[in-house]
Amino acid sequence: MSDDCLIRLKNVSASLGSSVIVRDLNLCVRRGEVTALVGGSGSGKTTVLRLMLRLGQPTKGTVYAFGRPLQSYGDGKPALELSRVGVLFQQGALFSALSVFDNVALPLRELKTLPEDMIGALVMRKLQLVEIDAASAGKMPAELSGGMVKRVALARALAHNPELLFLDEPTAGLDPGRAHAFVRLIDSLRRELHLTVVMATHDVDTLIALADRVGVLADQRLVAVGPLWDVAEHPHPFVQHFFLGHRQRCEKQAIRDFRDRLAQAPAAHVGD
Image 1 (cartoon, rainbow, N blue to C red):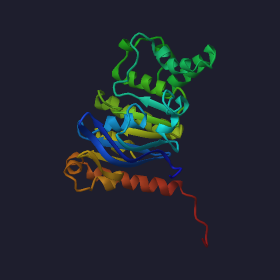
Image 2 (cartoon, rainbow, N blue to C red):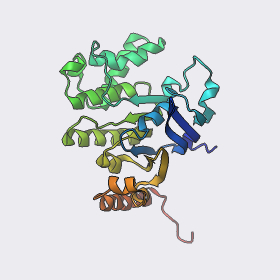
Image 3 (tube, rainbow, N blue to C red):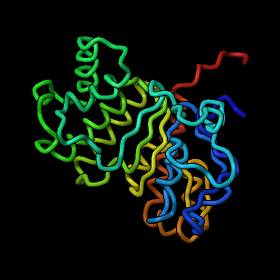
Image 4 (cartoon, rainbow, N blue to C red):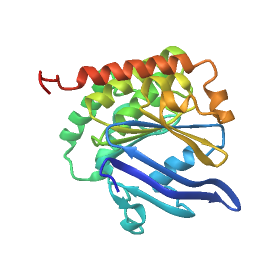
């Protein structure tokens, strides 16, 4: 298995009772990339995320994480070390009885290895990263706007300095302005912190702004996997409908990505 795959699904199927949700999935989440999953309601996006996090078990096939099958971690043991994985849940999932500070501090306190003064410094650093001011640290979730809830939840997901970040519908519930600002923040942080990201989304704007590779779930399968501009041309009816009116934007993003790669490539020497 390639070392570039932080997560790999190999011939993975999942069912709920007698109903098949997904079947025979093969997918590599490459180190340093944003891999996005798209699909209609009930297509299995969240199920696939749960399988990657070992919150569910495949009925067939193997899920690998950091080069090891998840089953090899053993019952009762965390499949993915807290220090390597962060999760942003769809609605933020902040604890309503805890302040902003305590929500972000919770995963650090759960380690039971850090002194409180260090936890405090780390929490304030994470809040600064997501552009939450220090004066808001004592607020309760009910006092926050939807955009602030997402930012605090992102700070909590980043508390352990993970290398792999899971995003479940990161812009759900946000108005277009707040969604755009949050996507820009995610893009900035993933570059600054060298994150690998797995994202489930139904939002084309988020997809175009963030995704390096896209997997499309339809008919219980991954019907297309690849760069956004290639996937957008796939003939499957769901893909054609999903990207209707957006293909030119996907092509423009492909051109920008190509220019970025050229700009980052080492300069060629005369005679090479």
